Image (tube, rainbow, N blue to C red):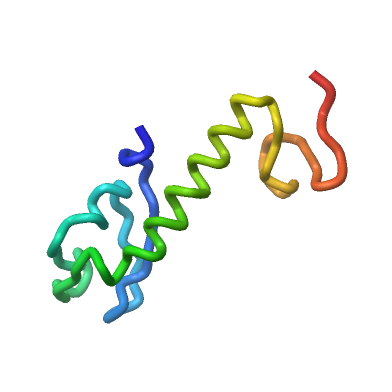
Amino acid sequence: MLSQELIALDCPYCQEEIFQPLQWFKQPYFTCPACDGGLAADQFAPLVVAIEEALEARVADMLRGEASCGGGCRCGKTADRKESP
């Protein structure tokens, strides 16, 4: 499920955003759709791991009925209080 989440990461060469499923960034080798620069999974590995951890934490929070967004999103919750069910 999480591997199909579309994310945007900047190309290290042209700085254009690459919008692809998370799994796409795990390929051994791929090219930037904007500049055709050669890229490898290890260039994005730390970011991919952090994104996966954040997504998993958010799903766990949602299952528990907690908000980890800290406000600023459309859920209506703020950093200092939670909406009543």
